[in-house]
Image 1 (tube, rainbow, N blue to C red):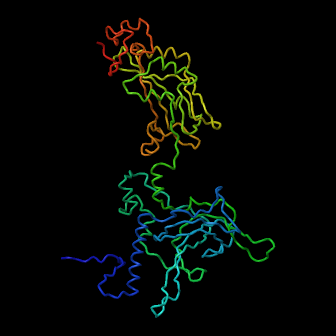
Image 2: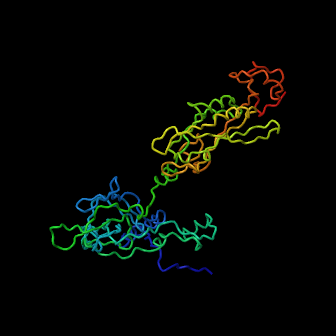
Image 3: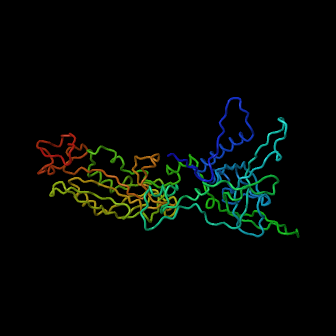
Length: 473
């Protein structure tokens, strides 16, 4: 048997269904407008929540309240209130006498809130004749002041410490789909409620919603009565650094969301260039002569230099945060290699835009170890530079973005904050220089060398085989 579910106490507004030659009444036309406005408010509230969309700035470039005759200047802006209504403010001045609730009676910090207000124009409505003027509902923004400023109530929800919260749990909990360990968002309580009755204002026929105000700043109010006046106290806005971003909720515009998704709000330092990056862009089968590597280690002009996009704290650049290692092939153990750290005497800052910070460094090894390094790399090696991004700090206290050199800023999804920045290149052992036209090996380098095919001499400039190490013929 079919049953009819009547739902809750409130039903969704009905829409009139028109017929030909039907005469529409004022009630029907108003019902259409009210229904559309309600649907629009509910959709706006559900998709965006409530808060400041843009504007409502009160401060100058120094963070000070913009004042003139103890009145503040508020820039043009848009707010979505707790019932999904749009509060558009064209910009202008606001004095304490303009607020619509109780006037301040003592010095102190007050929270300034914006409210929805409306009035009928003309207030008496339409007359009996068709030629009478149509009554309009005008809307505007009014402001109130409340003593002191509490903490913002739109912080992240407090999650249980003894539970494993999954993405499903968080989404279902915050949207109110489940009554679980994750609380639903606070603004959902307003989404399921209707606007209350409007309160009178001192401004004639205007009425405002006192309960659905949106805080936009905390400001200092004080007695501004002139010294030569004997009447009671007069209160006005006074110079201060108002608390703005910490107290107002926000509705993020789509362009802002794209900027946040691309990490435009975070300018992490990156490795800008390496003086040996031409060695990194070659094909993997290409190698770097060992004597070139040793010469660059000793160079004072184009040695192993690292340059960053932002100044880095010198105190974070040391042998534990920047490592230069060599994976050496041991000829007595076949293809197994051994990792050895190339000892650095110090890391030399090259450009210091301000004390304690540098944009570039040079890796300076111990001079005594160069000969040992050259002898250890006779069979070739993998040279690896590792920069531990979590240990570096820029002038804002932020870690290194360790994305590779060839990944641009447009690829925000591939950022690597605090990760290890790693680059690798291959060395050609001294016993395999017979294909290097810039090197003249000694005769003894060809004796008992299993990697040099029989009959290959000094003048043979053919490329090495693609395998590593090359197999003997």
